[in-house]
Length: 40
Image (cartoon, rainbow, N blue to C red; front, top):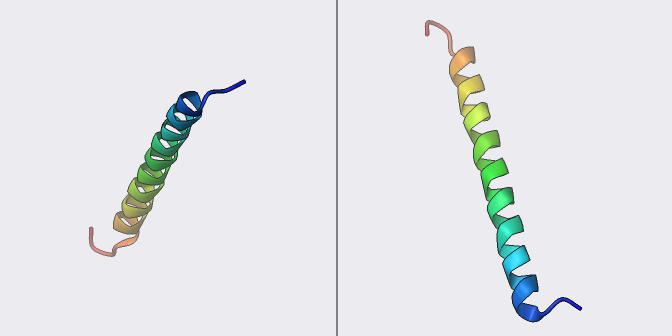
C-alpha cells in the first residue's frame, strides 16, 4: 500500500513534469511567433 508521503512525493514529481512540459510548449510557441514576424 502506498503511504500518504509516497503519494505526495509522486504528485510533486508529476507536477514538476507537467510544469516542464508547459514551459517547453510555451517556449516553442514563442519561437513560432518570432519566426512568423515579418522583417525578422
